[in-house]
Picture 1 (tube, rainbow, N blue to C red):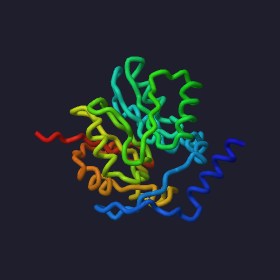
Picture 2 (cartoon, rainbow, N blue to C red; picture 1 turned 90 degrees about the vertical axis):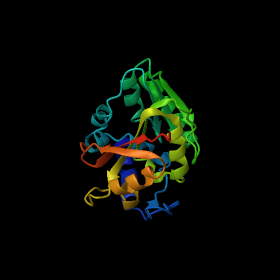
Picture 3 (cartoon, one colour; picture 1 turned 135 degrees about the horizontal axis):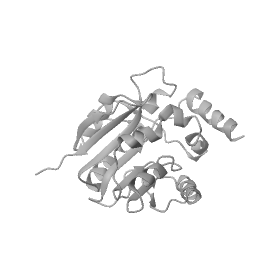
Picture 4 (tube, helix red, strand yellow; picture 1 turned 90 degrees about the horizontal axis):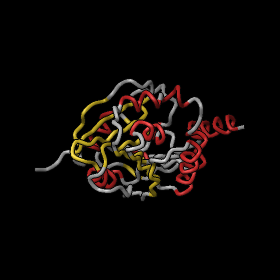
Length: 225
């Protein structure tokens, strides 16, 4: 039954009429996608995700160190959260940020089920993820940035939250590849991401091209002297 439900949700995402977008980014003209609600939680945990997105390979590419403090912004039910927690170890911390209380409750249940104790569930807002300033070694957003209703404000908050030398990482489905079966508004090109993120005080570092369907885009905050 769980598998059938996941398939049904996937069909809804791929085939249903588009929901009203939350807005248009002023720099790129990109239509901002609607946020996936808690009804999509089963789809986030679908078994096929391992093959389609290769999450372990993605996290390995981040080269996290034990004891680091990171944030999973738009964490959903914690699919990437526990992988990050595993990487930073018992001396590290993961802020798991969600703007939907119901999704955050599911994440807490998943962390309890897995026995993960170094995760800090954080209820954020549309324009503010609620992270401490100058505290994070890395911020990760997996298939999330394109849904931010107020991306410019969120990026400014993330800039303040990152330590000098910290990294902002966006994992986004490739809009350059029309064969990828995801609605257009849920994809981004590398150029769109660079234009939008660099405008808020970040420097593009690289696109790690190891995933079959997604970009791994790495940025560093630029500090004004």
